[in-house]
Image (cartoon, rainbow, N blue to C red; front, side):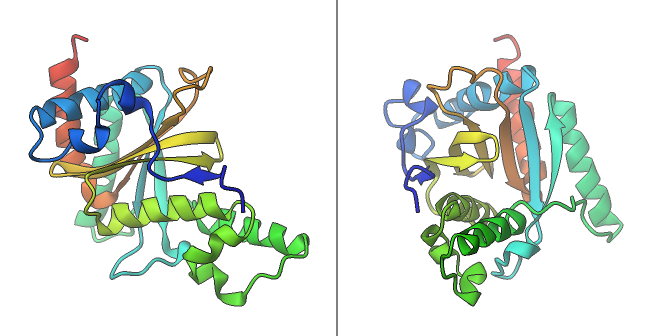
Length: 232
């Protein structure tokens, strides 16, 4: 296990904006909604305008389940608000028609987990048969801590979380990323963005992740933010 794969409760880009980001989005904080709009402009709107953002809609886990194979997703290029609306329409139409929700064949959790386990076994490491369904034990092999960190993010986005905000750092297929995770009255989502000290941050891809149930609430929030900040 390498602790450089992931770090919990780290400082990130929002520390340049707020003295205490962990309190900036709490319900009792003055100007909380303004903080939300400014955060979205910094972490989402600007990268969108540069063509660097992808929307990832997740689904599949329900009733407390968290099997890696069951976590489904679909990615959309996210350059404009209309791109987001298109994704929301796709899922809304599928739900109305009682059809399977849109998904990609490539697994975002099960496949990298199987690869990491196979590499550990190839290096002679003994891996228990039930480790796939025991996420807390994934950090025992190389790459497992990063996967466990992402697993926890996906789990909180599906099942909820008491903390309004948290910031982590994690290795991803695109390199190290800050994970800014939000559980707000307006909706729940995570933004994966390049590290603040990344020299290529303006060109590096970012990711907006949310559960399919959050598409309509976040669409409303983004519309409000775009309307408020369109002149900036």
